[in-house]
Length: 266
Image (cartoon, rainbow, N blue to C red; front, side, top):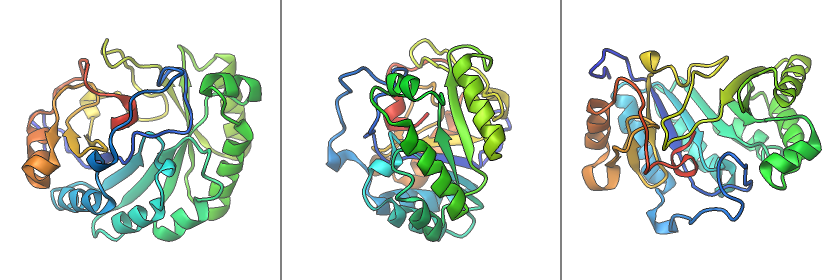
């Protein structure tokens, strides 16, 4: 798939739930947010069908996101469905790691290739503050389980306020070096203000090289995280929704009052 600006679109990010077991201060308010009704969320079979169509159109890389994807039950069943699609060269997941320890081996067996784990600090008290109650040790245990299972390479997603020289970000860098893990530094973004930057150590935020479309947990294909346009696979069918999102992909992200990170994936 080639968009109007000559970019090859080979990457589909799939948000499978808006639920999350953390309340990170940069992602949602302390009281949480209204949740999508269960019947409005795509089934695993619906997600797999969209992915099959997308791969037939040129998608090669799929990433499962949330919310927190491991908060959805029997996630290994979806992973197996996606892994079985001929033409999927890279199947990854982004997780906060809280439930990774008990799921890593099953995910690897189902066909998941690698994981990105969100980790913003190695200070337990600071972690609890940032996540509003999360336990750092559970994330560290999840990373160790992912290493043992062979989910490699493991990348750490570190959200920072402004600089990788911040104490929290530096602690993540030290941990990454010690464990042989890649670290990606992500500046805090604002969808409504259209504020984002290129991910340090990754390709996200680099509009000139953007190669992705996004599928929300409610079945809306979006051409860009910073766009209010979306095309429903339930209303249009998977191919038409993907084609219209491709045709609508902007040169550069602007802003969005409709998208939320919890339902479309960061």
